[in-house]
Structure formats: structure tokens, C-alpha cells
Length: 135
Image (tube, rainbow, N blue to C red; front, side, top):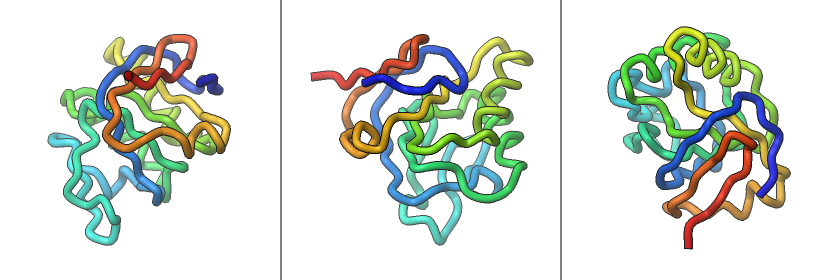
């Protein structure tokens, strides 16, 4: 699947598919990667080491700093796959790459391709932004 690359990189893991947008600020615990927003349908799930598939980020510009902190603590997603461009999450990943020389790739898929990514599948994103689903 071809994508628009916001932040290049490589990442692999199982897909955590969120149908609702998520704010990292107040929504994700940076040390654990757990979704802590009690109003979010995926509350309790972990984004850590996962291919996080969601429509876009929601809310505060501080989400970039929470993603950055998750990278620093080793609890960030392995990759972030969006349906719409999200500059806030891209900023957090880009700063993480500069500060820590690591970050999750952030890519945007066309809506039909985004919708086809199955929950729980093993997947990877390569530096060109190509999303591959195992099996």
C-alpha cells in the first residue's frame, strides 16, 4: 500500500486499529503507551510497539510532546498510519528523530487503503512509506 510519508522510517508490529481519533495529550500514558482516555473506545489498549492505525489525532498541540516522551521512554508506537494529515503527530515524530535518532514513521494512506488495514494483523512500514500486511 502506497502512502504519503510525513516522517520516514521503519517500523513493524501488530496493528492497533482505532476508528476514533486519539489525543496523545491526556489520552496516552507516555511511560507505558496505554490509552488512558476513559471516553475513548480503546481505553486500556497499548500503542507501544504497535502499528497505530487511526483516522487522525485529536486535540491538543501538546500531543507532539507526549509522542516525543513516549519515544524517549521506549513506549511509542512502532509506526503511525493515518487517514488524514496530522501535523502535530508528525512534529512529535520529527523532533524525536532529531533528538533521539529514532521515531515511529508517520504515513497517510488513501481512505480506501486505510480502511482495509485489519486489526491485529502483523504489519510493517518501510522508509519509503509502504505499508505491508503479513500473510
